[in-house]
View 1: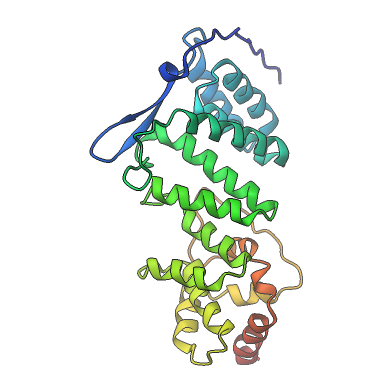
View 2: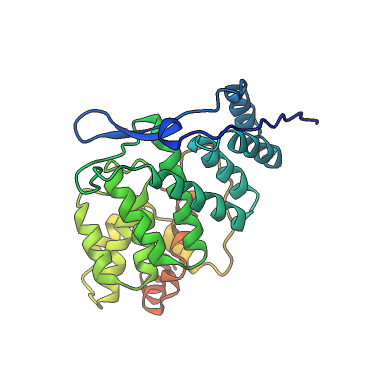
Length: 286
């Protein structure tokens, strides 16, 4: 398969003109990220690059790198380049692009923007490139055991986008657990009393196990109702990645169980937790 990529010499442009943050309704803001007017085929290249993701990620990288080079203020191009790099396991390059793009976007946030007051909601498509780059930073920092950096970005994102469309609070909880800050983990879980995710339901259970609280039958029942496969995942000696089917993770599935374990695998090496699952689950089924 051959691809012809045309590189355009990009003229120097004021970033406040081609990349800026503007106020929308009330406390909501969004990025305005404009393409290079000399690049006449941005939309076509974006579409073609998207068609290559998961099938030919190396080709997708070439396409999105071309778009990003020709459109330095087009945040979504850098975001898609990160996706293509991540899918190829090019972790160092991905981190470099993500950090550069994050700093670029942050550089145009005006002083008037108060993170305690204003938001960058996911519902505005123009914000998603930046939010996706932030998500990529969290993943890369976690892969490097730089959990405090991951926590800082998580907290920043939860202020930007309170609806948490990307599930950032679950990565935040996993990162807090990785630092063994169980008090902070409990505080986070208590902020979302109605959350019935595998992360929070098993998180509640684990916190009580670590406190040596034996009265956990109700918490265990709730966690098992969410995903009864997870305790067996913890006790496996070898973990195989289930096949991904589509974009969504079915509740109670092997895939959900594996992903939750993978994000918290150091936590679930704790002897108290392993012993609990052996006694409660294995003994019950024997």
